[in-house]
Length: 167
Image (cartoon, rainbow, N blue to C red; front, side, top):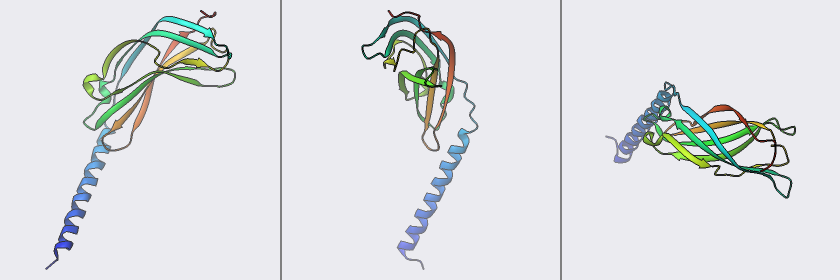
């Protein structure tokens, strides 16, 4: 006969193996989900656009952010981190990204939203590079699963331009 310790070890090893197989199946099943999120950003007003004393440009804007991210949620999704970034080019850098707003979506019921807000974080460029600058608004998201790897994606919205003169 086997001892109690041997039987407990065999049972624990079997349980951990079954748990690992279930986690692997959960991770693989997420690969079959093809999300189709949508988003729209509307800049309503440039509240101020100024050149600060240190020579940096700063912008404050009022905007409407609407998105439907419900298709990102599966039974394995814990939460989704989402943020809106302004992206533009300057002579010094091919890509500048400035985060304007972010949020955590804890459940599918909250994944369809409409927000009227000013930028939560300062839109500052190091230098006087923002006058008459074209920029994109990009909604990024990171899906955090209960088990498995995180994945990220984005929607790029074009056609935004800053004014010629400071206000």
